[in-house]
Image 1 (cartoon, helix red, strand yellow):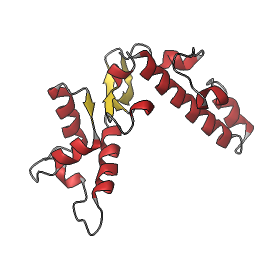
Image 2 (image 1 turned 30 degrees about the horizontal axis):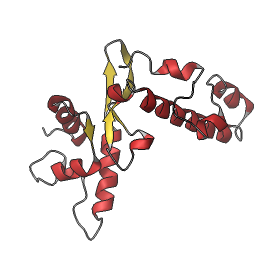
Image 3 (image 1 turned 135 degrees about the vertical axis):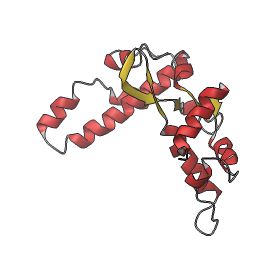
Image 4 (image 1 turned 60 degrees about the vertical axis):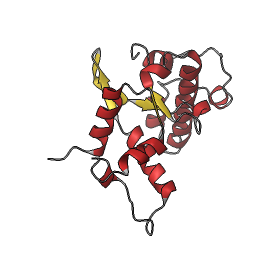
Length: 164
């Protein structure tokens, strides 16, 4: 039985002690026909080019989930893309990102932005759904205009506590 691309990449990252990885590096690894990730990618340039393979690599990286011993019922991403690092360093270990105060604040601001986005969409559904979402604090303006070093309040900060 062959190993899935996701399982292979997860093992590769964890076993190699990788802290950062880019989509380009994943595509380069997968070029080898013997690599378990090779079949995950579309190599026919008539159907898709390099940019599509980078998209596939980003989806593969983002799809790798892990659990922490102290939270066995909660899956989190192994690697995250910190907004200020996009286009530079690729993805980094979540455990590394949440130990960096600036990266952590950026990730929390991004989460708040997504919560605000979905709250806006849910307001079109019904009041029960909106009430359910209101349990999660999000400040629309502060999430979109995040400044490094700004203090965040609410349950989101604690949502990442203990994952480091």
